[in-house]
Length: 375
Image (cartoon, rainbow, N blue to C red; front, top):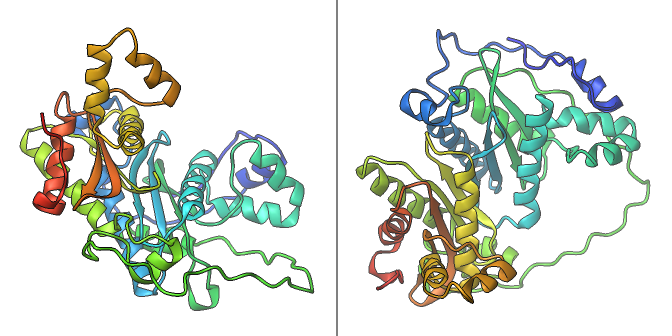
């Protein structure tokens, strides 16, 4: 199938990229419904062409597994065909730049309908390209790939956080490529990496790591620990495994109610750790879930208290909501375990059960060690 073909150009670099055509063979199938939102969920969003959560989660999980096998950590973003968050996962020890660039790579691949490396190669030939395309919000680095099935774009993936070791067959882009091949089927060959010119004299790079990993009073399965904690200088950030457990618990609970949800887990610095948008959820639900998680974290309390405050004090409470950027809708709960704040969870899209879903996730992950809202 055609991997990239475009007749629309926005600047010299994009015109050059649009001229690139790659071909690949995707596993033969009469329909792509295995990989996209379908049925009632598609009807609810008026879109049957976006990647479904099962596929996004499978691709992200495989990439994380491949990274773990190589002793590295990555951050993964999977977007749908409209550029909206479907799945986010950050392995332990990843910092803000790792997470941010993973999303930027995914958005670049989505907008170009091409690997983000295609723009990187253009920038390698001409530095002016990189500056110009940054004005369009594009990121000239490898690690972002469009997700295409049967000649249709169903989403995009961005992977960040690990240094490339091309001689060993590893890079962020290879992680995404191999994960997609395992889940969807054979993919187009990757573009060649053009070498970048580097100064003959290299400046020394400063090391900045903790001499010994910080320690937490919480079990290691709940929080980032070891070398990952040493990199972060923080042993009280929720671990990727615990964030997944919170999400799994919330998802299982809402499925039991015959409904769906969008779930966002962030750490104690408000950085994304794990997020999932269940099929049939409106794209904006992920944004509101994130806003709820951020509000609960900064306010050190459930967002339901903000919602109640607006209702109970309509003359004064809205000022603090507006000035502080708080989101005054129930569904956000700080993640406090054994009286230690380690992150926050936000849930949206459940038609009145957002907070209950968040609580179910916390109890599934931490049992009675988690602090939950009491009325």
